[in-house]
Length: 346
Image 1 (spheres, rainbow, N blue to C red):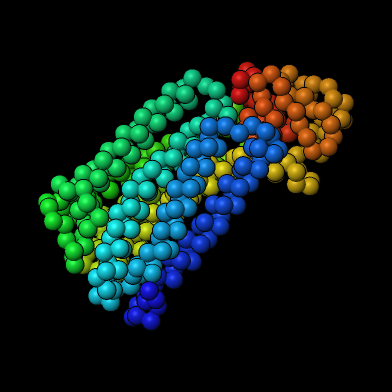
Image 2 (image 1 turned 90 degrees about the vertical axis):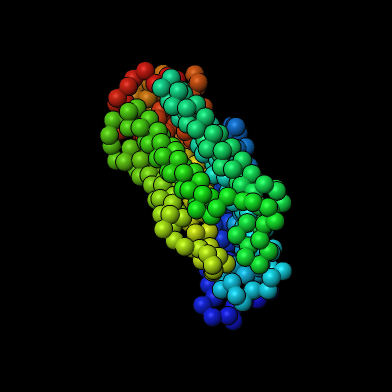
């Protein structure tokens, strides 16, 4: 149903934003798959987890777009009761999918870290964070499914025209759960932002290229920021009694959080594409080896320059794709020496 002629309608913002989010996520994940399957031929667990997260985020955004036809972005008193019933059902499904979408994105980032560096301390931190994510997700998902005595009542939760038949937890209690889930998510995102940057900064001497890589990874700051804004909105904003009109302001930040997390997980995988750009890395590496095909001493025995074209081949545990190459060969000769020379496992 078209509500665009109703006063204060803002459903078009949801459609526009989610369309752009779907487009960018499709581009970034598509490029990631192209790099891993066609260029480096090194698909891994992190790619499949990111794919599952992409599908969940795609469903979430498409459902958000569909909810506009059910009254999202429209004052509640302009919406027929049958559409309101569908809106609240959709809202419940979106919330349940959201828990797993953000969890899968974070798992994908955790699964990526071994590609960047195999370090015992990072492994311990990664497993600790994974346990936190599992507990956070299962706790929130289970709470949402059991917040009413009758499970079918969760589809009527907060629906004033068709309230639950049984007893449900209060809205304030649900908001506390969502705030708790959000705060844990902010902490986890901050850790996932810090870990790759920490690896880069501890394995390399500080240089211009180090700064460039750190700045790319620092896009994750925006993901942390969206999580903070979302928690603040849940804590401070009153959504009842006009849920259909007020909820989209929260939904925008909810969708941004998941999609930006996915982008941040895809960016490091795109390094081989950046190497193909004219005037980038190949010239510097060729200047060091002159196409001799001999081991590059400045890079260590684990990296061999094979040609003065745009290809670099790695050996002895350093694969010819994007992550370990950042640490072992991506920086160029003038950016050496490494802080830690024992980087054969990185």
